[in-house]
Structure formats: C-alpha cells, structure tokens
Image (cartoon, rainbow, N blue to C red; front, side, top):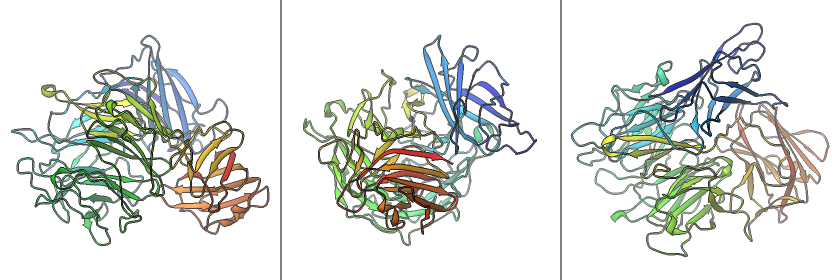
Length: 620
C-alpha cells in the first residue's frame, strides 16, 4: 500500500521548527519521506535535498540541507526556526530519475512528505473497485473516492492521505448509496487539519432518483494517515439534488449549485451548507439565471463565484457564464455567453478570472478553443489549440499562474504572458500518461490526480507531479527588470491591444484596472518596493478570501502621487506607505489580523498606464 523510505529526526535545539518550544527545551520532530510502492525510491542509494520555507527571508546557504536517505536519524540543523513548509528533492543517479514532494509543517507530530517521480505518472498501491459514475475529490491533504454504481453490490468508500500515500477502504463509508454526489472540504476553521469532508446529494444508483441528504466524513487524528469514517447521522438538504456543482466559499461553507431535481428537471436553485451548524440555508442565496445540470463552479481569486458550462434540457450545452458575490447572495455581473463544444473545462487563474478550453462538436479548423475570462468579466480568445489535438479536455490549476492541460495525447502548459499553450517539459508519454476518464482532481497546484479504470483489475488512483511550489516559497528579487517571471496577469497579455504588457528596459505597463499578481506565494508581514516610471500603479494586498486593500486606490489614495518610488509595508493589521523616499504614512483601512495576503500591481483609474520596474517583495 505504501512505503516508508526514510525517517530523519529534526532536533530543534537552536534551530526550532514552527511547533518547537523556545529556550533550552527540545522538541523532536520527525521527517518521514514516502514514495508509492509502484514507484519506489531506493533508500540505500538516494540523495536528498530538503528546502525549508516560511515567513522569513533565507540568507545565503540557509534553509537548505542535504543527506543520503540511508542516514536515518540525521539532524537537519540548517532549517530555520520558523520553517512552515518543506520541499524534498531526491536524486537517484543510477536510475536517472528524480523525485519531488511538498508538505506544510503541521502544528505537532511528524512531518510527512510523499515524493513522486519526475516525468512519470505513478499509481497509489491500493486499487479501487471499478464502478460507473464515481466521485473523486481532494480536500486538504486527503483524497476521496466515493459513490458510483457496481452491479450487485455497494461500492466501498476510499480515503487517501496525500502526504503518505496511504489509501484505505473505510470500514463503514457512505451510509446511502449515491451516484453523482459532490465532495468538498468541510472545515469549521480555515486551519483545521486534517480536514473533514461533505458528500452531498447525488442519486440512487438503481432508480436515479435524486437525494436530499448529505453525509460528513470526519478524520481521526493520530490514526494511520489520519483516516477516519463517516458519521452515521445524515444532514438534510433543501431539496433533492444530483449532477450538481459545489464549491467551498471563502467563509468555509459549501455552496451547492443547480443540478437535477427529483422530477428530473434542471434546477436553478443554490443552497449553502454550514460546517458549524451542519444545516442548509437558502435565504439570501441567489438563483441561477439558467437552470443547468453538471455545472462547473469556481471560486475566483476575487472570492467571486463563477458558474459555467453544464447542460439544459435534452442534454444541450449551456453557453451562459454567471458570476455571484463571495457569499452567493447576489449576481455581480450580467451573464454572458461563451461558445460551447463536445467537451469543456474551466479553471481559475491566479491573478483573477478564469481559463476555458473547449473542444468543438464538429470539425472546425478556425474554432477558438482557448478563452480567457478576465477578472473584469470580459471574454478574450487566446491562441487556439488545433481542435484535432483535443481528444479530451482535462484541465488542472498549475503553479506560476500556468494551468496544465491533458489533451488525450500530450500535456500542455499555459503561458499566461503569451496567451498560448506550449508542451509541458519532461512530461510523461504513453498509455498511462494522462487521464482518460473525467474523474480528476488536483492534489495541489502541482499535482494532477485521476482515476484510471482497468476493468477487472479495478481502478488505479494515478498521479503526476509536475511542480512543487509552496505558499511560503521565496521570491526571486528583484522582479520586473528583465522579464515578468514570478507574476501572472489577470487578462490577455502579449497580444496587440492588450492593456497589460512588459516592455524590456521600461517595465510592466498596466492599463486602467489591469492587474498582475505574484503567483503561488502569500505573505504575513511583508515589505513591497518598486520603482515608478510614468504614472504610479497601485499595490494590491489581497486576502485569501478575496477582499483587497488597494494602496493607491480609494482606501489608501495618497500612494497615487508617487513619481519615483513606492514603498508599502504590512505589519499585522496596519499598512504604511512611503512615496518618493518621504515619511511613512498609515493607510486608514486595515487588514484582518493574521490574514495572509497575495501581492499584486494594478493600473490606476486615469488614462495613463501605470508602469513599474525593479519590484522587490520581502517577508518580514
């Protein structure tokens, strides 16, 4: 089922990890590195480099340690006291393969990292019974396979820990047989780990009658993989609902969207299920303008909810895109239509908005297969992929603001500054290279997961790690000197007429409202400095719930007068600004205490483009 490849003791005297105690006391934290048995690491030969990241700026030769995995018990003394995440790179020269893994440091207990081979897919060792209409989803560091139909028997429910590779069939599992349910994280607080999960709605596999209940999976901290089971008490939904969409709101509540009701007709209703009260509510919840089954529901970087795709009566694809506020209480934009096709996929973009890939229903060489749904809600075509290459459309979020796409033949990577897809370097090829079914999930922004149905042999849970990037990762300073590396735009870039572009020797030009954000990383206390060329852009501090403080906007307007330089510093709730080397001034609007923020730049409201260069972002 799984393989432990090494156990390394982290002695914290003088080099405390996040949960270690200060002073002379020592708390030992163990690091366990796992690899799937199907893709084993040879512990006797493998050499590992461990990178520590946190809310600090690592100095030269800091935050990195290396060792042979056979040296069990080695103290990793190079890791700083405030390490919050680890990236493990393993080299095994004899095989010519590297392995990579990523994990955040928990509050207590061991630190587990599951490493995956570079350029290869790998399956978790335990198979899942082959079934139709299963649900696959990742929630926190766990993954679940639930529901579906197996003739003559009840499908088991499986839960896996993506930090160890443990995948087990639950003793009890779902209390109700369900096809087409949704699975979402169901945390009572944002930092709850391991996370519970909500399995909602679906239909009876035999009668296809929609169900009006949901069930809660509760992890068991301290058990192998922290795997738990389902509570025996079901919770009621507002109405029967199957083939619906679901997303976790910024509040932690789960929003259920559309689907098919008990009468077999498409639903326009939405409802919210609260993990604290464990009740549904429909008051102050908007309705869809277009009823639909199988919608795609995304939470955007702004916190807004985008509802796309799905089908209406007679299985006709719905072209309409709809936007709703972060609490789903009201529409925020007028619905607009996007072209449809035989397959569609949508993912949110790091800086804002979303990306869509559409395979046409008929042969159409001039069909626009790639679309950017910008942060302001406009539709802009990207450089198309040849429709003949799109056997399937399996789209995953990615690091660096670059989603990845499996076309049925190859892996492609989005290039946000050129509005095009390019081949993903060192990607796997062959029969097992990518998902054939539509049961896919993202373990994190660098890990693609899917179910691989092998008939009588069962279903494999297969994964492909294409990137490792921590939200505590370091920033390569300075930025915006020779390239846009480290940032991503919130709309089409690199084409004539774009409102955002990088000009070598000048900097990043941002038209009114156009934004670019640092990708993947978020910050606690942080300093931001940039050189201003022409009009001053705003510095945007975006909380994880999507709320923003725009330094240079209405909430902190005096930054607009910068002509040479702009300095912004965030400490706890307070944000202070220095323009052109002058005195620090405090913004009248504060951030939430303890809120992590993403950092971005935005063009002002005037006619002149904001221009920034020599951007430096430092953790404090």
